[in-house]
Image (cartoon, rainbow, N blue to C red; front, side):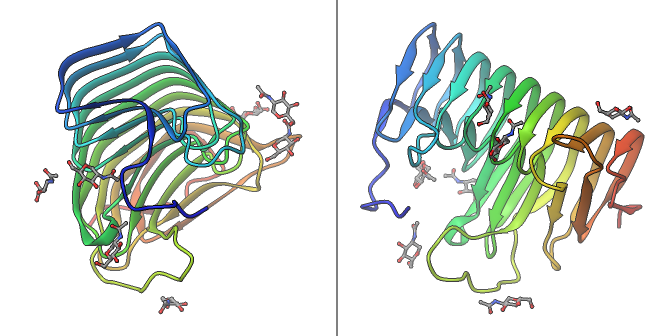
Length: 261
Ligand SMILES: *[C@@H]1O[C@H](CO)[C@@H](O)[C@H](O)[C@H]1NC(C)=O
Ligand SMILES: *[C@@H]1O[C@H](CO)[C@@H](O)[C@H](O)[C@H]1NC(C)=O
Ligand SMILES: *[C@@H]1O[C@H](CO)[C@@H](O)[C@H](O)[C@H]1NC(C)=O
Ligand SMILES: *[C@@H]1O[C@H](CO)[C@@H](O)[C@H](O)[C@H]1NC(C)=O
Ligand SMILES: *[C@@H]1O[C@H](CO)[C@@H](O)[C@H](O)[C@H]1NC(C)=O
Ligand SMILES: *[C@@H]1O[C@H](CO)[C@@H](O)[C@H](O)[C@H]1NC(C)=O
Ligand SMILES: *[C@@H]1O[C@H](CO)[C@@H](O)[C@H](O)[C@H]1NC(C)=O
């Protein structure tokens, strides 16, 4: 659905230009849009939270970060109609751990590079998460024409249950009514690790990596990834302009091109 205006979305609880803020042990229910958001903040903690809204409520992200760094998001139960955790703009040194997510849209880096902006997200670690009935698992998404990069990201010890796109990188993200123009610039994606990711996919294609011709995704790694289709059956993987390596058990078999440029 289209937002009704261009102002920042209404938020249940919002912090801007903050330092050393900790939000702990509260429940936020049925937020107007984002439940908890931080813009231009440093040294943030968000833990022991319950963020709850109906699965069909639009834009109700659980925790949203924009231009923030040194953030710890841990021990939260998030069940909303949009991303459980999302980060945009320039974010760095973010740790997301022990999250139970779902329903909702999963854990997302991006969308980045909207309207040709330069965004830089780096040093993000997401681990020990359970995603259930979400439309995505762990996702990196960027608009064509954006600049900057998403790099040094690690997703580890993630369990998926009936997740529609368990592992997804999309450099062609387009969330507007008219098709997005093809553009050459792209937000660079490199050094991304998926380690110990297992469980079930609601769709046949459990791994989808679609990168740009001009800025392919490089230094990706799949290590001990085992995703099957919910109810039984082998899943598939698709890659476009993506390179890196696979290690340990990788099912579906890795589609990454070997060797990085
Ligand atoms: C992020 O915050 C910047 C200001 O720091 C603002 O200009 C931008 O619109 C915000 N982006 C999103 C997606 O909210
Ligand atoms: C984000 O980082 C890029 C590159 O370092 C910079 O050009 C841009 O102005 C930064 N954006 C903000 C909102 O600080
Ligand atoms: C993107 O830029 C166009 C043209 O400047 C503007 O009409 C549109 O509102 C912008 N979109 C966002 C989300 O900032
Ligand atoms: C997942 O969805 C199924 C089918 O709608 C439902 O039975 C199950 O309770 C859901 N699981 C969770 C943890 O929400
Ligand atoms: C999986 O999710 C779909 C919706 O994406 C739902 O229809 C189905 O009942 C769920 N299955 C299980 C086993 O939870
Ligand atoms: C972008 O390029 C793709 C692949 O070449 C093409 O199918 C699509 O129509 C193009 N989109 C636009 C809006 O030009
Ligand atoms: C992957 O997971 C499935 C379902 O849990 C299991 O049957 C299979 O043995 C696992 N494959 C490997 C290679 O571990």
